[in-house]
Length: 71
Image (cartoon, rainbow, N blue to C red; front, side, top):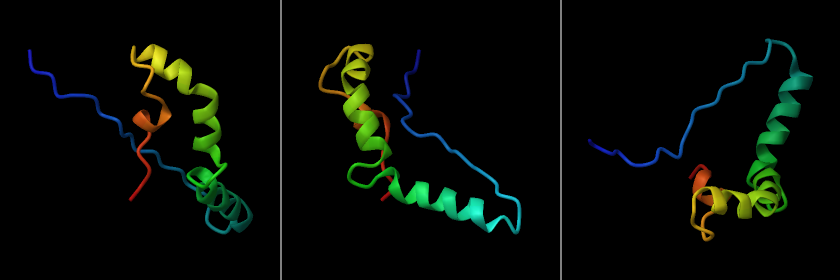
C-alpha cells in the first residue's frame, strides 16, 4: 500500500452570468472577506476547531489544518 498523504486542497469555481455586475460585486466582496480578520474562516474556525481536532484525533489541529489560505 502506498499512502500519498492528506490532500488539503480542493478547487472551487463559480460562474456569474455576463452583465450581472451586482451579483459579481457581491461574490467578490465575500471572497475579499474570507481570510480577513473576523472573516468567514476565522469565525468558522473559532466555532468548529474543537470538533475538527476531535475528528482528526489531534486537538492541536483545527480549520487552519484543513484550509490553506492563498499565498
